[in-house]
Length: 255
Ligand SMILES: Cc1cc2nc3c(=O)[nH]c(=O)nc-3n(C[C@H](O)[C@H](O)[C@H](O)COP(=O)(O)O)c2cc1C
Image (cartoon, rainbow, N blue to C red; front, side, top):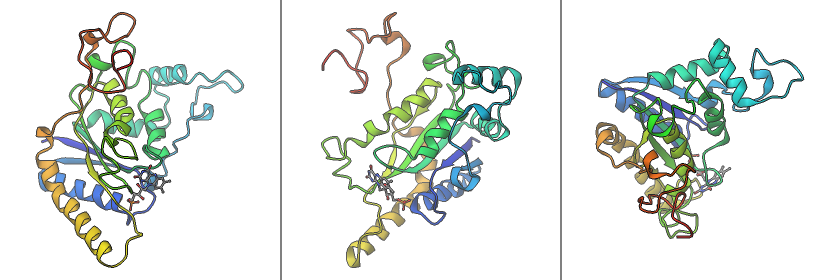
């Protein structure tokens, strides 16, 4: 049975984001899966990396974050809250990220979790990344909610294509070797509606929560977000002319 790490990033326990995250946990448990839980706000996770986080940092010395992380990995001197999170990521077969889209991306607390937890040498090295990433057997899923409508989050929508907004997070996980499944998205989530529109939104959100058991059960059969393999790039790191393009983020010339 898989072990699932649920990472949720919202300051309000009663928010839709956290209600959805709890549904993920319940669904995993109902299916007999082991659940690991990281509610970043509830934990008081500090997303801000700084020299003083490193026990071995010499005060006044130039703070080179990658090298500090390398040294902490070698000497086992990461702060204990970081080690706990790294252990959870290492144990997980699946990671489900629950968060609202804030300013077209993930909340800063989750970005900071990536900066600090997915640390150099501890989770990746130059030789162990992308196709050779350490987390080749880990599958991730984004369950994200937007205030904007599904139309506005579509590829031709004025908020920008949500799948593209998720690309930098998915690419972070790809760097570690993980596979990221196609996201589950709830749109138009806000508390400004009144009357029938409010009732309709509540019905829609209840449907999303009720469906989470199916999302978890069918996890492995979801589509995946495609990335180029290492062999698609030449020695300079440029996409080879005959390689397939999976995203506007990595494309041929000006196409
Ligand atoms: C700081 C901030 C930035 C936001 N930026 C976006 C955005 O870029 N796109 C969007 O669709 N909604 C945006 N929203 C709306 C949130 O996505 C929405 O409030 C959230 O999904 C509602 O879920 P919740 O009840 O769990 O908070 C933003 C909200 C806040 C507070």
